[in-house]
Image (cartoon, rainbow, N blue to C red; front, side):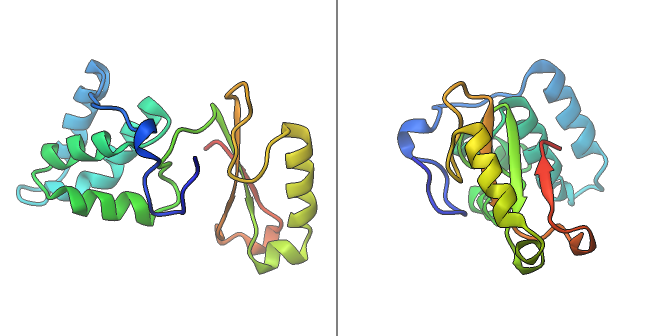
Length: 155
């Protein structure tokens, strides 16, 4: 089930726990160490990114682990994760295809690109292909309007 932006996925999709891999634990420690004493909470965004690269999305359990690591209230991590579009709050396909649908991109043909993506991938906006390979989403401006329309694939 897809929920509105800013809300984690349905409870039945939420894992009971999360743990960084050994390699990512070391990477997380290195990230946190870059911040001055008392400012470690500033590592929230890179830790969310690291966790998402490990799992492909950010679950509530993941946000809770990061909150504990940074000694900050969970709600502060939730605020960051739900504000930025770069964090996936529900499971996604192995490849993310995003099409900008703001006015400049729409004027330059984004609707046609979105139609082609739907047809080729066989999924609707916000959906994931049956084989789990592709998720199709729309997104807000990347600030590259001069190059419109913009399609963002993976990283």
